[in-house]
Image (cartoon, rainbow, N blue to C red; front, side):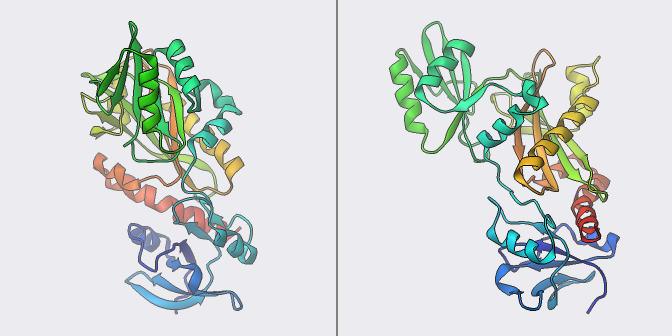
Length: 337
């Protein structure tokens, strides 16, 4: 049995979680896949899947002193039980799926409120109100659906238009009642209404900025990576991506005389700190920001289980090493404090 420090990866599946092996080797730690049904509560041990620097092997070890939660969804009950053994907040990323309305309310109660689009839970009455106020509005689910159910509703000279993914409307209506009836048929779960933000574009393609906020080996939030998603020319959402590019390159082309990076970094860290203060222990999240045609910065969305592999499109091996290393550095910090 290895005497190296062990860092737990809490998972519902007794399977290796790839991507972290190189970081574990660099830090000289073992990784342990911890599944609830294999925990020995009496002896504070676990029959785990252990990466020991060479391979993943089944082994009984002491319950690690810190764990990185890899469940997807709300805080699993097992987290509280484990923390009763190893200590409070020793399991990080309690929540890995955010409710967009909850996140909006938390940010609205912070100094970041000026960077938020006007947002409200879906009601037909608010569709009417938002159309009168903004002429265009976004309708989207409160939980993540990978951008598949984001609709745009618009009014122009008394005609109402419904868009789904493209800048060409899929339906148009001459009566407001017909629009509302159609939208109601699409809203099959909890949805939000949101002020439409006209994002800046390059060559006719809008773009956004994704920041990866992570805690480092001292338990301090930092921005480990950033990228820009360029939408397809026919789309009004960046989820339909034409290319992933370095943020500096995109911003230099769109706003050649402005430096947004310091402010974007500041906003990303503030958002991470604000959300963690309310939802519990976090070690990483991503922040999607938009910059409108006038250079105003908007916080569009936060994701509690960011897809690190998205950053591979930038082609920077050192960046990928950095973003897979940070969660283990933070876990080591938790295990020794």
